[in-house]
Amino acid sequence: MQKPVVKAILFDLDGTLVNTIEDIRRSLAHALAGENLPSPSATLTKQVVGRGLSNALKGVLSSFGHQVDENRFDQLYQAMLLYYREHYAVYSHPYEGIESLLVRLAKQNIPIGIFSNKEDGLTKRIVSSLFPTYSFVWVRGLQEGFPRKPDRSGIDYFCRKVGIPSEDLLYVGDSEVDWQTANNAHCSHILVSWGFRPKDELLALEGSVVVDTVGELEDAIYGIQREGFTE
Image (cartoon, rainbow, N blue to C red):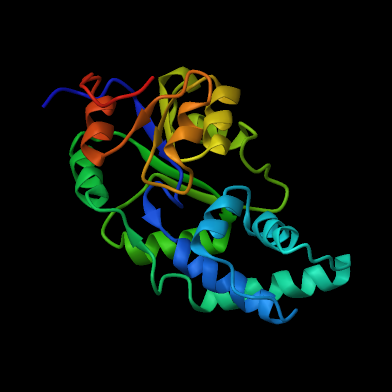
């Protein structure tokens, strides 16, 4: 098999490698129950994720037109985190074909990392649980003092770790946040349409590269242009 056209790959987690939406939805529902609010739908949950769990909770509360003060919000957020930490991978699972793709990439000795806006501890636990036999070079979630996406700091850190310029990195995600992150870092990107954003929203992003299947993603990694890619 030919070599990848990039020297390293950094993946988003939620909606890209792993379908986490149901566990997130139930965690949000647990917090909302404290305000006697209904559980959010999967559709609403997909709309609010991508910028960290705190912002997801803010988004859901806003969608219900429900305001709370800062102290109460912190209580609800902690309740959500506690629930999620105890139920972080009940329904979550890798998307079909992802595990096989990672195995094939590993045989090429290409450095692969994960960069998420989810809390760092949760990110690492989900990755360890769902990819127990795969060794990522770097796994990082949201940490205090470390800028969240779309800030480019995470990409710069990963590139320094593996010893490449950002121009040699491919960033793979599923949202406008990931698209902006790659643009900010001046690295190539691929957006997957099986994640948490509608395909038409991804296509509306200027210069976006969108794939519909893991097969198309793998082709793009190896520089194979086939029908189905959208640029």
